[in-house]
Amino acid sequence: MLAGSSDILIFTENKEHHIIYNNGLSRGDTYIQFAHKDETGFTKMGNHDFDLIIVEINHPMISEISFIEQIYSLNPNVPIVIVSEYFNETKNIVFGNKVSEYISKPLTVEKLHNSVRDILFDSENKKNNNIDGITDSKKLSILFEMSKCLNSITDFNTLLNTIIKLVTEALECDRATLFVLDNSKSELWSKVGTGLKISEIRFPISEGIAGEVAVSGKSILTDNPYNHPKFNKEFDRKTGYKTSSLLCVPMKNLKGKIVGVFQVLNKKSERFTRDDEIFLSAIGATTAIALENILFYEEKKRETNDIKKLYDELYTTQNMIEWEAKHSIISELRGFIQQLKKYDAVPTSIEKLKNSKKIDLTSSSVLDKINSAHQKLYSRLGQYMNDLMNNLKSEDRFQPR
Image 1: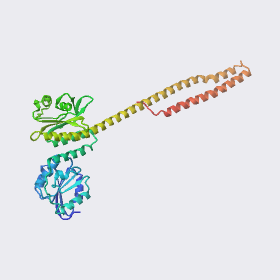
Image 2: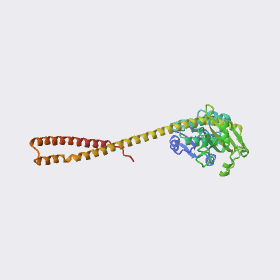
Image 3: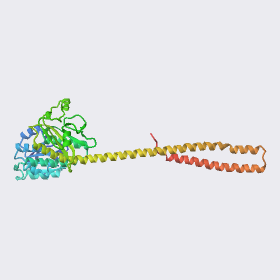
């Protein structure tokens, strides 16, 4: 597919895509090298002159943007191709002209070949004219991509873990926790938090800085949390963690109702600023929508499971009642049959009476008629009882445990 000599470096963590890259690019004198987004990858890039660099972006994170900017700063004349499902609509704002081509996922051999062919053999496309993106615009892009990412998640735990990962990276902080507001119990709770080993945290909204924010609806930013009257020093004491800076903001839905609280600790560079507060509040607004949607989904899922469980219990109870009723009837029928067997001796008694020679022919004729009627009645009644019992047994499919 590709002619000429070209050296291509590909940054990807997806080994399954290696086949696509090899099929789409390995032609003629084209050489491909794969690398990870770490120091080893940068070393590989610095030790060789590449004609093209391809970077896969798997998350809508600021670190991914910074990685592209680092590559560009080291190789400003080498075309860069991004492969991702993020930043397509905002690529010009985020990357300026640092990126020569954007390939949207899912990645295919055809997409790859067509895009790379145009870049490698079009001298105009090889030029990367630097137009620096505006920081605020990049943050807006991150919010936009976060919204797409979070609203595509349907599992509650996955959503929380993804939110924490994105917020920790976006705010460049050491730890982050998302507390969900439980209005019915006037409590805040969380299942996840970076650096935490506890599966769930739950406490009244009257406690802690997070509780203060949930009640007041106002953010709290402090570089000296130990002097804040609501700060819970006990948590740091138990875990050995030292909180030096803290930013806590409310999460509000479209109606302005508080649905949770974001709390981030210890910014890695300098201190939390008012810009960080605005940015985290914006993330909170975006996240609140996804959080409410999935909480609603989880609630409906629980209600459906409760209804199914109730139906199963009713079904089991109904079948148990039917089973007990059938077996009660069978037991009674058995008693009736036992009673009928008492009359088995009637024909024998009639025969003995006739042989006693104490009755005349007229009486004997009457006895014969009685015996015949008895035989017919007994036979029909017995057959009816047996058929009824057999039918009940054949319909008895439920076996209680």
